[in-house]
Length: 121
Length: 141
Image 1 (cartoon, one colour):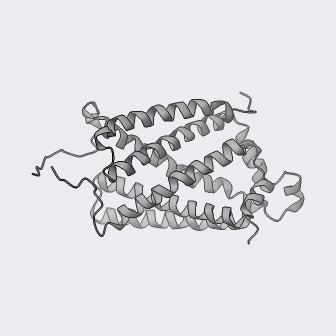
Image 2: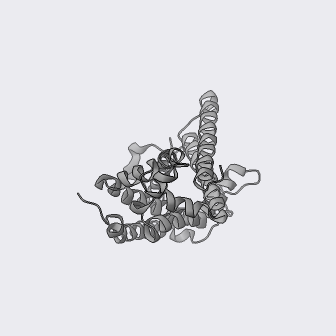
Image 3: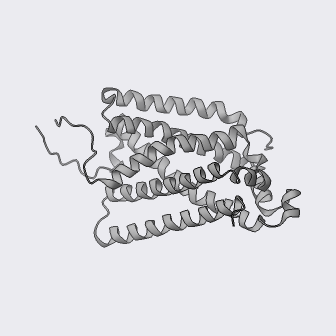
């Protein structure tokens, strides 16, 4: 049995970023749920309230970072799950391209929405 | 000494009766991950109603803008509240098991990896049940 249990190998950037984003998302997702369901309540959300939160630059940047890390973590997770399932060859390349585009579109739309909410655009 | 096995396809769900705690943790983590990324796309779509709301100050001040009415309309549905509780359960499990995976990757507490999976499940159940009253506040059947 191998003595080194960690699968962290040099050059494994996808693996590394999946863990790095995970560590951030653990905190950000818990914070997001707590703030919008327990401190504020989802059924009380209004544009005014959202605007007030998003006008705080620290909050806005945290939300955008949350979006970028979640999109990467989710899309990379789906891609790796499909690779585990046996995806290879051309299909693998096509799926990677489609997932990358979907992730980028998600980040672009989400960032645009956040900036509009914060009154920056 | 290393040995190699022909394990067959790793994710052969037909072999579920052979699965150990670690395998179930892995499957639950993937299942909850698929739901969370699917939800993120839906979430951004719904929040995009803010694009139609922005700029209409009168509607925003009277809380009749399309963003506010869309969110409050959704929140008035019992089904949405139930789905939110489900989403919380999914998110809490993914977070707790994710912490467990980070520990496993760092080689910490490997001998208790099955116990920490059971702990993740129990804690997820407890947090979800405790959150039900908050999530059902002000909604009719």
